[in-house]
Image (cartoon, rainbow, N blue to C red):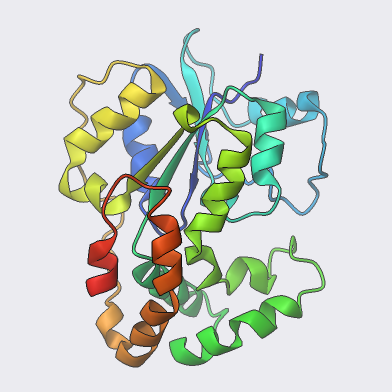
Length: 254
């Protein structure tokens, strides 16, 4: 039996930390510590690693819990990372996957601001977007911790449809739950109950809403870049609409 029962696989800057925190308060669930295990995207991870080796890593990040608890982790880069869908399925074909999606323009700017704060990004948002493809193309090894594929993939990570398509190629739709990240904020209890029902645990518990991160980024600070980025996603919005059951029109009209 695999040690991991479910995973929050993305997207980055879309509320995955908040959701993991809320799920960690449920008596039927056990979340990993740290929240982001980064097992399948680790520099040393080899495709096709034995299940026993994967479980050995997971055994170190879960505290002793009561028998019967479902174990989960939240590593948001898994949605974006190549081959992770295939590797997760190979590891545990019965695993349930939760995806939170955010307006990709806001997500990209939040990602950019994080890298600026970390002093890994010196360019303006517009310049960083213009340079993104070249930077990623110049990576010697995308698995390296400082690779542009990881750090400067502002627009690329918002191409959700191709990322979701990879997961639907391996997992049945019944094992994948895709949510609008704003619903976790605006319809907290309803959205959380939906997640708990999906996981098959008691969904009637009241897990209070709380602010996990108070830092806010305002996309209006980069009007030209955000406008051009939103235009560049128009075809992606159409592609994505086939994979989600919520309206993405608000993302288009902003």
